[in-house]
Amino acid sequence: MRDRDPVAKSADLLEWYDRHARVLPWRAPPGSDARPDPYRVWLSEVMLQQTTVPAVKAYFHRFTLQWPTVQDLAAAEDADVMAAWAGLGYYARARNLLKCAREVAAMGQFPDTLEGLLALPGIGPYTAAAIAAIAFGRPETVVDGNVERVMARLHAVEEPLPAAKPALVRHARALTPATRPGDHAQAVMDLGATICTPRNPACGICPWWSPCAARDLGIAADLPRKLPKKEKPVRLGIVYLGRRSDGAWLLETRPASGLLGGMLGWPGSDWAEAEPLAMPPAPGDWQTLNGEVRHTFTHFHLRLRPMVARLTPDTPIRRGHFVAAADFRAAHLPTVMRKAWTMARPFFEDA
DNA sequence: TACGCGTGGGT
DNA sequence: TACCCAAGCGT
Image (tube, chains in turn brown, yellow, orange):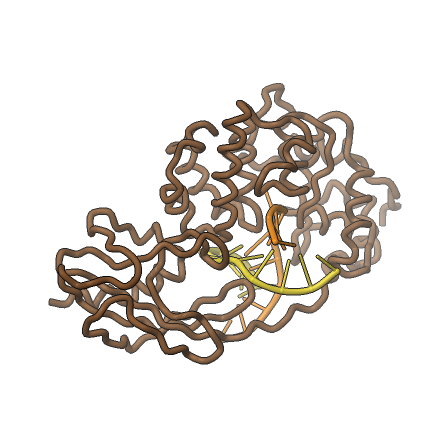
């Protein structure tokens, strides 16, 4: 076996990155003099928060087509942005995205310092460092889940997350180079995404094989350690899918904060441990479907009972508003609401 | 510090 | 099926 080189070097990683960097729509090629558009870097980083690259690509494409600049996005209607974000999850990101776009548009351009970026809504320590390094060439240290995993293995940090976080940040900072900090940041993340993966890391082809302490100890795949997660409770609820004879659907815009905040959804009950009694949003012949919508959120499992009714044009409405058939797009609903629509659709298509 | 906050893909 | 996980942020 080769001797361990105890010191990891950014240069070895950058050399690997120059050959193996993933080609992504928001990226400049490695080592290129041209810096990527801060708007595209910011948009991609917000979309990528807790979200996979494959999931983001289509959304990034649609957003940049519809709103090519931050000024365009700042001028958008709230409902249009929420509809375009539907399905991507963590909808507070979309609300903050729009707030941030409007602040930046008012300022004229994106701030080019860590502190300036950090002051914007939806931009935290990770995203601020990523934009500063990638879009503005500043030597800031980027620490996301990939970097945490790579650092935990490189230095064989056995303390579980999140307690280990400060030590991992120190390790990451010590490796950040003065030159090409943006490429370095993306290189560590690419390494974590393609080689230093959570399971079955490909240590044999890793540019940091030699200095990696966990690889040396044979525990790379066991790091980083994590505290056990809490169990998810089950919650129950009812949703009401009403459709008028002219094809319009009865929907409501959910409150701006909280779960699915600001998104379109079917009126319904609260979601609780016992199935709550609920008042339909309009009088009518409401029928229970024999199916059940199952959906798992970050912190609970949900089982929804969809109820359906055909409504007449003069039906008085207690909650929500009608969306004309021509304006309705299931893709504009958050996934759990789209699932309910998919289950109820046959009822309305039967004559 | 811990929790609330989505979704789809991999194993 | 039931986990686990993915370029975190706000409170």
